[in-house]
Amino acid sequence: MDRGKKSSKLLVNKNSKNHMDLQDIIRESALPFLPAKSLHRCTGVCREWKLQISTPFFAHNQSYSFRDVSGFFCQSPSGTPSFVSLNRMAYGVPDPSLKFLPEPVDIRCSSNGLLCCQGRTGYRAYYICNPVTQKWKKLPEPTANHGTDPAVVLVFEPSLLNFVAEYKLVVAFASDLDGFEFEIYSSTDGFWRISAEISFGKMKLLPRTGVHVNGVVYWSSSMGRIFSFDLSCERSTFIYNNGCSSLGAVNGKLHTACVQGLKLSVNELSNAYANTMQMNSSTKTWQAKHAVTLNFPVPDLYPRSYDKETVLFLGGDMVVMRFEKKLISYNMKTKEFTEVFTEEDTPSRMVPYVNSLVEI
Image (cartoon, rainbow, N blue to C red; front, side):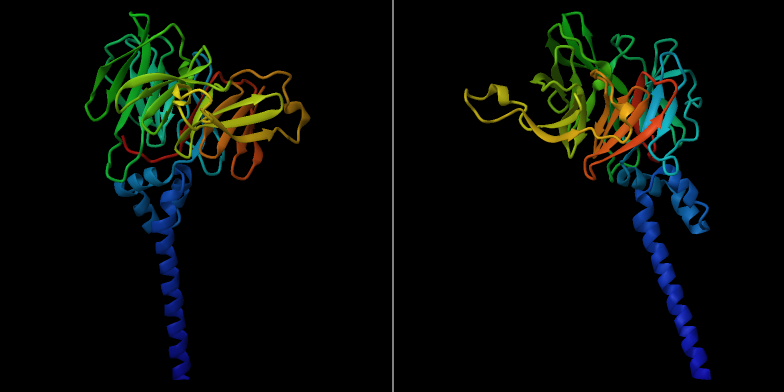
């Protein structure tokens, strides 16, 4: 009988040890890969998880590990921002209207959990904020006039070595010399700087098309070409486009996407300098990656005609399209279409957002 009791006690201790090992594995290896809203619910699991999630080191680790697009900040002209979640159980922010900022703002762009907004009063200051933590920073007044709808791109790449977010704000603005100049704000330096680069030409950059891919910022233009600005050498150039105005980063490379007829096309930039090569070269600027027939279960999703803003977002494994008042996402890995949401009033501006705990 004594031996039986001892064996039972050993079994309990072994199960308890396995339980603790599993708990440690989840805490250390799984939690950092969850979005902020899910982590908020996880704080109620136990005291250890709550303490773990509330530490600055965990927030830093999560901002590096989790980079999935979680939803879109939406806004109509002069309206209040709102947030559309791609998964309401997993993704969300406490105040989608951004009323924690000191003044009403217009949303401009985002990057890996940071959101860039612009005030509507005074010199129309830029604000960099994290809507999850509701922390923000007001940037100093730029030297140049960026206009009422600036071509601005926020550049933030999380790093394990930097516990405080280091980011840049890149703005292309109209030059007095009949072209474009560039003003750059660096969070490391804390001030604005106008680049020596000037790009001459009369084409207009499309402000809300800007993306950052591997140290280069790209915009679509009104003349159908893509405008690029290399941040390392601060040089600009044009790339011949393939008819698609929606730009995005997929697997570290620039991609374009567009809807033509009932087909979604996604192309990869294979060689930006193909047009400079010798005649009869087989090298192409763009390589087709996806050509998908739109096959939705609801027939009335098909519009009669498509404009250039049908594709709202391209990045990672996802393409998000707008069809009248419906948002449809396409996963390039699983090849599945999903209806994201339907709203009465379709917003004119939609900015992708990552549900991150990144510290400013």
